[in-house]
Length: 240
Image (tube, rainbow, N blue to C red; front, top):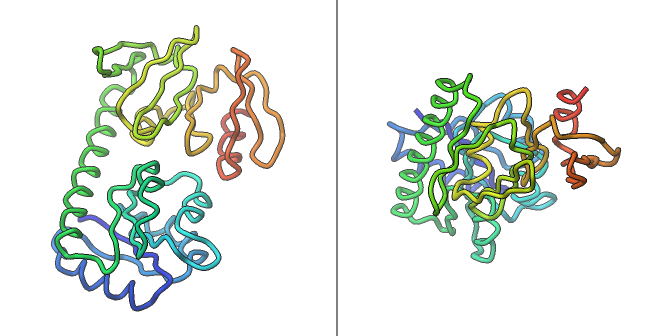
């Protein structure tokens, strides 16, 4: 059964959504309801939800800022808002869906269907990763065909909307129509780590770390990439 958390600064709105989610009780359980973003930050680590129903307009910290504070996260996101001006930002974050208040029950049903599909795909990727944990090669499907690349030749992977750009040693680039989040599960070992919302790095190509709020990495090809402040500790532990 899927576990869901609701974060909405309006008590009435969060209760109403919880009631509507009750129609899906056989496949989804609400394990937490929060009306203050700061209280939800730490609780999400313990609750380990599959999906967060996240309001965008909240005092002190909006929904996008909330996700930035988290840094990296393994759950899916369904935005809930009374405004329709954030659609592009939601798409950039690869959200499962974007529901306008008052939430229509049929649209909610569609969102749950998409959620189930996304969670199933993630589970399949993790299974594939376990089966091929000793494989040194990765198959990248593109519009041109399938590239077989050595993992050791992957310098970094950058997010580009709903695509991922693989930058290989020698400055070769391969664009794949999958999100960075999907590759985060596949490239999860001692050599690779996600350093920000938009970049996964191969640590073997790092030649210098410059201090800062999050810091900056210099790679062996001379390029520089910024590190998110919320990913800094994880990065430094792997590097040193």
